[in-house]
Image (tube, rainbow, N blue to C red; front, side):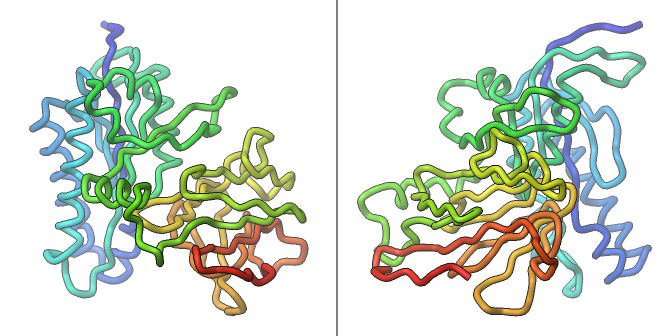
Length: 311
């Protein structure tokens, strides 16, 4: 028998397990992953949630409302950080956890859940960067007012399978709140980056930390529209996060970064990296590919009086 209920659907996914299997071997890696997923499940149940099913290296759960789901997300991030920190084997690479949650109606049938809230939450998980928790506006509005300042708006994202873009918010870690308020206040250190110059198809714009994030992609609703079949509709996000400019890949084909004149290229697959100095961001293919779709960047500081041309 099916029933329609209003609840908060949460998806959590552990990433980095492939590297664990390569470095630790099947038995030890499986033990670490199983333990980590089990910890996530216990945290969710401790906050009054219910695990619906496990999904490989992750799980799906439901809560009666977003408040305990947000509390679970915070605890999960802290616990996974401890597990993959001092307590993990010395040669073990760190795992990251991505979380997405959506509050809305769903249909429960024979212990499983279906509906728009489930679909959006699952797709939103694909857009989450390392150690991020993403929510929709509808979910934020179901939270107590005094908790809403814990979230930062990340513009509208095009989620796979949906025609209309979805407005997305990110839960900010507690330890970053004081740093963020300092950066936006009068006491910001003089050496802190003041902005970032982005150059795309001959057009150059400077963004301060206050008017980020920006989305780069093929969609005409992106802040920087790159009309190339190799570029996803919402390909990557550039934002001010934790006192640095962060680039997060949101794409199907990956994002590539080359700093300055260095030959080394950083490859992002749903991951993130810190932008510094000058360089190029390439979408979908390596910067070494002829006519690759690229966007140039230059991190600016207050004492930059004569910025050099972008590479």
